Length: 112
Ligand code: 5GP
Image (cartoon, rainbow, N blue to C red; front, side):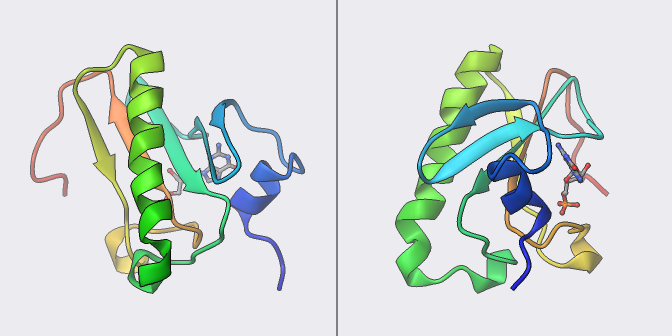
């Protein structure tokens, strides 16, 4: 199977502004930021959609939130939004799961 865009970033085949990396996940700045801080937290494992996360992935998914906490601290963020879009109708465009971390401005709800 061909690599996802985010696997190519993880493998340094496509450049990105990486702000965190470990053996299970990485975080890099979104190319089209929707807030002063917009970072994507991505597992190295290419799970396509949130609804394809399996029970065996539970620790990995928890790890994404740990990475988000570390990155928020690095960025000096106290308040921020974490979002994972599931499916094109929900706004998903890259089918390799990722948490969006958005911060640095006040947020509205509902997001639209
Ligand atoms: P989604 O729409 O799937 O929830 O989020 C995908 C995100 O990936 C979008 O916010 C989009 O701007 C970002 N993105 C798409 N291509 C690239 C890229 O090549 N590099 C980086 N850093 N972000 C990308």
